[in-house]
Image (cartoon, rainbow, N blue to C red; front, side, top):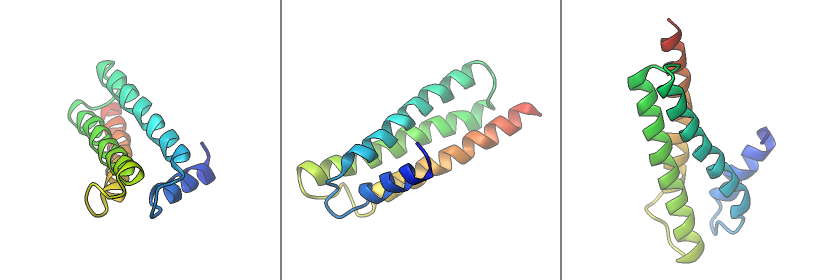
Length: 108
């Protein structure tokens, strides 16, 4: 998924009615594999243990917020809580930064 795809996924996810969930769903599936990859890298010692674990939990929490909010908006017509999807997206971005930090610290 290129930069345009990510931008489209973010735009559709944060829309008022969340009617275009296909691209947002693809982004969530990508992050689901990131969770598995992060755990695998932790098990092999390629990520710093504590920071990598925080990143993995961040992906889980961020994806849960993001997916929960989108699901409620799509099927029930209301939000999980105000700005739940953007909060989940921000947590996932911070988790990517934590993965990067964990990889750098593990290399030292």
